[in-house]
Image (tube, rainbow, N blue to C red):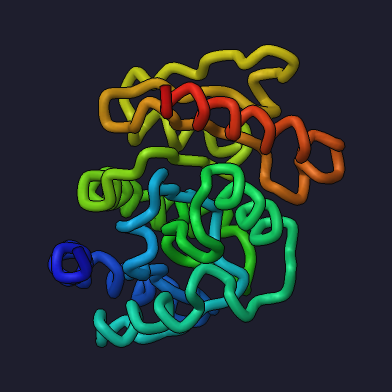
Amino acid sequence: MKNELLSLYTSRQKDFKKIVETFPEDDLAGPLLMSPDSAYFTSPNKLLIVGQETNGWSYHINEIEKQMTTYEKFNVGIDYYASPFWNITRKIENALDNKPHSCAWTNLNKFDLDSGRPHGEYETAISALDDILLSELEILKPDFCLFYTGPSFDYRLKTIFQEIEFIEIPNFTIKQFCKLKHPNLPENSYRSHHPKSLRIRHLEEDFINYIKKQKNKSAK
């Protein structure tokens, strides 16, 4: 799988460089290039998390394998502080009967801007890479796919996944948490608020319990 991802990212290296070269005076960290641990592939319910952007990252744009090593060393937050993003992800892994730190993780924005969300012309340029997500999904073949992207990125998802359906889940609004239906996504695909927002809105427990119920249904 690593070789497939390496081939994918190498084929897009010129596109990564173009973005950085377009904004030479700005701090664009990335790209975030996946290289999941073997624990992902042996999980009973392979979990892929899709976030928004990194909070700082490395800059080895001329060395694709080295950039992927950053991902391997980070190991889906194993030594990172217990942020809501990773804390809730650990709970989701447990709810799916997976080992801790066994998920795979990618972001909608392959680069961050000043350790935060790209905006305006930066986001427009970075969104040219959105189709990479389709290839990542094809390579990883997750059983569960959770988009922590919130409703503000739904327009990007609609571009990536043509005619995607946002399906209401009982006791939640579409903005809070919904099911995603598209041929390129696994049956268990969902879009929620960012985990920090889930916690602030006191939706964390209901969110995790719902995912656990879907795991139990899939197991029957």
